[in-house]
Image (cartoon, rainbow, N blue to C red):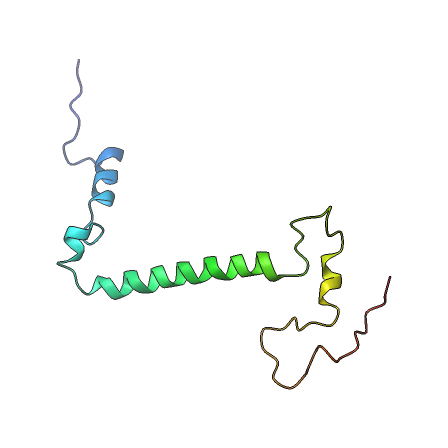
Length: 102
């Protein structure tokens, strides 16, 4: 005997279809929902900002070593350099480093 499926029952495919066809997620429907544009702009700005910050950490941080064989101790380059992002009162080029010299 065949069982009939309930027409009101939500299937996984119908839920996915509704999720991917929500209003405001395509460019065509976003033009009609103008209030969503600042929200998408803020989310995009936050995502770009976090990616730029992570890239800066990977490039500028003295604890990160991308070339271990050519520079085995990259933190020695920062002995008399400013590590803080902004420090208006101290000139780090004239300051003696308290770290021991190996």
